[in-house]
Amino acid sequence: MIFDISPPLADPRDFCYAKNMVPPEKPSSGFVGKAKIVAAATFLSRVLAVVRESAFAHVFGAGSTMDSWALAFMVPNLFRRLFGEGALSAAFIPVYSQARASDDKQLAQRLSRATLWLLVVILAGIVLVGEGIILGLGWFFGHDPKTALTLVLAAIVLPYVILICLVALIGGILNARYHFLGPALAPVILNVFMIVAAIWLTGLLGDDSSEQIFALCVGVLVGGLAQLVLVLVPLKRMGVSLAWLWQPQMEQIRRILRLTGPMILGLGVLQINALMDYLWVTWLTGQPGQALITIGSWTLRYPVTDGAVSVLYYAQRLYNVPLGVFGIALATAIFPYFTACAARKDYAGLIDTLVRGLRQVAFVGLAASVGLIIISRPAVEFILGGGLSAIFGIGPGEFDASDIHRVAATLSFYCLGIWAYCGVHVVVRGFYALQDTVTPVRIGARMVLLNIPLNLILIWPLGTGGLALSTAICAALNLAILTRLLHKRIRGLTQTDQAVPPSPLGEVAACLPRVLLATALMAAAAYGALILTEHLVGPAVAYSGLRLAAGLFVGVLVYYFAARVLKCRELPELLGSGS
Image 1 (cartoon, rainbow, N blue to C red):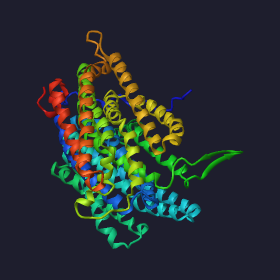
Image 2: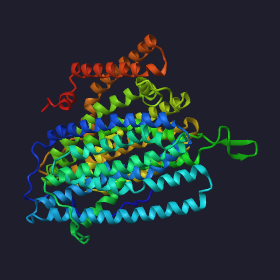
Image 3: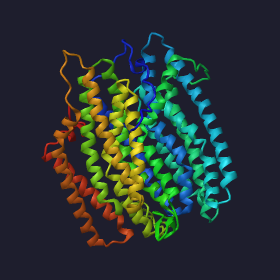
Image 4: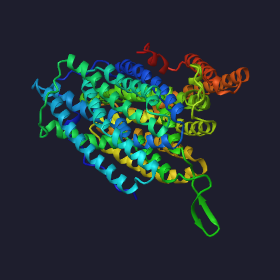
C-alpha cells in the first residue's frame, strides 16, 4: 500500500483571475505562436548546449573528474530544472495575474517586490546550510581525492541556486505580462559563458583536469549574474520596481508558498528520477569485475564502472535538447491559456486547448523519440566524440570509443520517453489551472517509488541504460494516469447543461494512426540515409557530422511530406497556418 503523502489542497483563490480581468483572446490557438517564440530562443540555447557539451567532452572525457563535476552541479542543476523550468513560475503567475487585475493598482508591484526579497532571504539560508553540510561531509569523507574534489566544486557552485531562482521569479513576472523572449534567452547567456570557460579558461589553469575543472565553476557563477541582468532589463522597461520590501505576511505570498512545494514535486518527477539515477550510479560504481556481494560461491558484481555518472550526465543533456526546444516551450506558453479558460469556467475550451497541446506532443514527441534513437550514435560521435571539433581542425580529445558506445546506448533508452516527458509538462499545468496541486504530487510520488525497484532490476542487465529505461517507463505511466485523471476532474466540474468534454486520450488516439505512419516512414528514410552515407564516406568519427546531417535532413524532410500527404492537422497548427 502506498500512503497519500500529498500536502493540503491550495486555496482555490490561488488560481482564480479577478472578475474584471480580460483573458487572452483565442486561448486555444494563441499559445502556438507564443510557444514558437519560446522554442526559437530555446533552440538557440540547445544548440549552444550541444557546443558546450562537446567542449566538456573534449577537455574532460567521461572519467572521474567529469564525474566529480556532474555530482557537484547536481543540486544547482536540480534547482534550475525545478524552478527555472516551471514550478516557481507556475506558482507565481496565477497569483500575480490576479493582483494585476485587482482594484489595487499597486498590489502587483508590492507582491513582486515582497516575493523577490523573501526568496533572496530563504535561498541565502539554504545556501548557508548547504555550505555547512558540505563542510561536514568534507570533514568525514574528504580523505578520498575524488570525493574531496566533488565537495569543493559543490561548495563553489552552490550560490548559483540564488541566481537561477531569481531569474525564474523575474521570468514569471515577464511571462505573466506575456513577454516570453527575455526569460527564454537566459539559458543562452549561461551556455555562452560556460563554453568560453571550457575552451579558453581551462587553458589558463594548468594541464591537470582536476585543476581545469574549476573553470566551469567560474563560467556558471559569472553566467548566472549575466542571466539576471538579462531579465532585469525588460522588467525595468515595463516600470516594475524590485526595491526592498519585507512583507512575508502578505496573503498572496502565503498562497505562492503553499503552491510552490507541491508544484516542485508535480513538475519535478522527471528531475527527481534523474537525481535518483545519479545516486544509484554513485553507489553502484566499482572497478571492472569487482565484487559487490559474495555469498558462498555466488558473487554479485558492481553493474557499472568509473565514468558512469558522466555517461548519465551527457545522455541527459542530449535528450534534453528536444525536451527543452519543444516540451518546455509548449508547456510554458500554454499555461496562461489554461488558467484563462479555468477562470471563465470554460471547461470545453480547456479540454480543447489540452487536446491540441497533446496532439502537438504526439506529433513532434513521437517523431523525436524514434528519430533520436536512430541517430543516437552519430549524434554522440559528432557532439562528444570529436566530430564537431574535427571541423575546426582540433584533434581527438578525452572522449574515447568506449564512452561513445555507453552514452549512445543510454541516450537511446532515454529517448524512448521524450514524448512522455513533454506530455507530462503540459498535463500537469492543466491540473494547476484547475486549482489542483495535489493530484500531480500523489501520482508523481508513486512514480518515484516505482523508479526504485525498476532501477535495481534494470541496472544489472543494461547498466546506465537500465536507469534511463526506468525513467522512460515511469514518465509514460505518469502521463497516461494524469491525463485520465485530468479528464475525470474536468468532467466532474462540468455543469449539467454543458456538453461533457471528450476524453483527451481518445482525441489524441484519433490522430495516432497518421502520426505513427509518418513516423515509420521517417524512421526508414533516416536509417537508410545513415547506412548510405556511411557506405559513401566511411564510419570514421571525423565524418559523423555528414552521417548525422544526412539522417536529420532526410528524416525531417520525409516526415514533413508524409504529414502533408496524410493530412495530419497538427502540421499546419505547428507551422502557424492552422486555425
